[in-house]
Image (cartoon, rainbow, N blue to C red; front, top):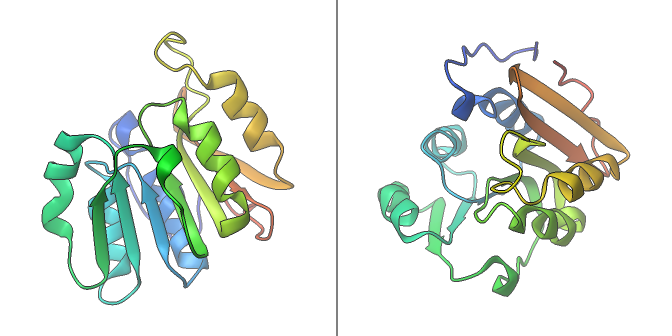
Length: 174
């Protein structure tokens, strides 16, 4: 249970919503979304309204097109070619990682670790089809390397990891 967040999760694709809302509630600075989503982008857009800076980056043309309409004065949405080419300037209160390809997630965690108060990683450690989820082992190792981490499980076998070097995330628990 996450205090202050009342949210019913109906499907695995929504398992990150409560920990993401919790992280935003605990912080006040800009938000970075690495990989747009049917649930995460509208949620972040609403929680950042009317003035908290939000940047959504997406590599997939169809996902970019699906969320481009959310762009406004506080919400920047950019189509990028590759995660490795993005400079990631600045500091972020919360970084949400739901990037494709999935193998990009470990590199994003490492690149953004010193630039974020809290990192929220969607579909952490998912193992149903390891051939499609090529970063399962390194992803788990990356999460465990943080002094503060918590694993939130909304639905069996669908986990969201919260990680921080500077912030106590122990308020989130299964």
